[in-house]
Length: 135
Picture 1 (cartoon, helix red, strand yellow):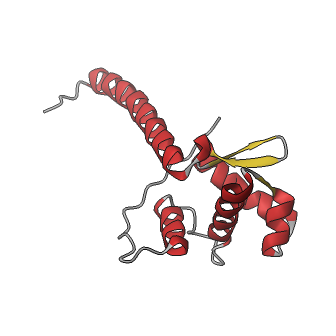
Picture 2: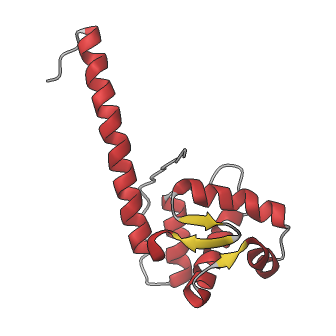
């Protein structure tokens, strides 16, 4: 499984506001940038979180109906959320990883640490191969 972890250090919202906090979370993971000028990924994230909080899971069709978007467009943006590690899909149903946003963030932290550990091992080999010294 390929996973892309993007972390952006953005200023937290000053006031507690659920919708703004969800948007900030998505932006901090780099989900609403680049070609997503309509912030569709953020809208889908909000929809997923609200539906999972109420029903335990959701589906592409429910999100599509909720946001009045085509299923293909929703699926495209869901892949971004799945690749980030926040949500996962099991058959036709969509869930928040580990059942909560906090637990999902902690799992992403573990993922990032595993990736960095692997990079560090290879980097050390590169340094030795090139004769570079670590201060």
